[in-house]
Image (tube, rainbow, N blue to C red; front, top):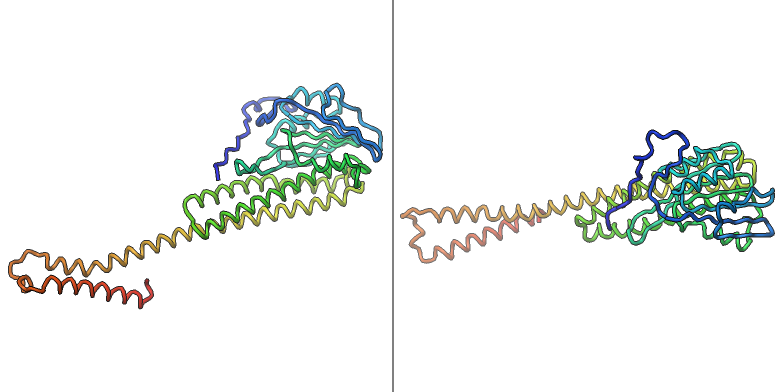
Length: 356
């Protein structure tokens, strides 16, 4: 499993600037800013894949919903234009630009601001990829901000196009719930992928543990720490949305409660895998210790057997002239036989004691 090369968020431009100053903090994950639009009601749908800044729609009347999806948050001028068009507070725009935000939900009166982490699994690098997603919810307008193309919202778009279910019949608050639900579903998929990798490492741990096994375990532990930092604040954000007047006063409140339960399940899954990895690390250390003990036991037995043999050889290796056995014809084979019997006898003694 390759080393985690996730880039650090740079903040050297941030200190000293006044509040509300728009400065992008994070990696630029796309060069161009793209804006898509879904304008729909129960009986109609208008989809525009590329919407220019001067074509931003005004809030539609009740019964209709406009969803603007902005991809690319590094262009602060474009964000400022969107914020001026819809009356978004500069502090909210500042948080949208700062990709190091925790998941949170804030009520600004006319609109609700939500920021969450959308996660996915990179099969090539074998690591978690994270993207900050911000939602600004008005009465009939929902604006979502993403860092790069590609997301978990494909099923939501498809449901809008097909007009099936209750999505087209509900308001912007239900659309916000649907997007958050798609993001949380991504957490479940990610936990499943990491669980598969944990099983592979566990098999390796039981069959042929080596120094690379410890590296794999530590890599997975780092990924789970990263996932835990994204999942725990999400619980607080969804709980705040569930209690907010914008959701509690509509039929979406019960769905937000269900979403909260899903987030709790995600957190339970994260904690379970973290506990499994901690146990696997203990097993690895015990396995290494046991293998070292087995090696030391074999070496100790060999050394113990050679102690009397070395003594016998040392006695007859002394250079005294008058030694009774030196002139005896059978002295050498008898001495070798005594050594062999001594070694075999010690091995049988060790086996009887259960030491080997």
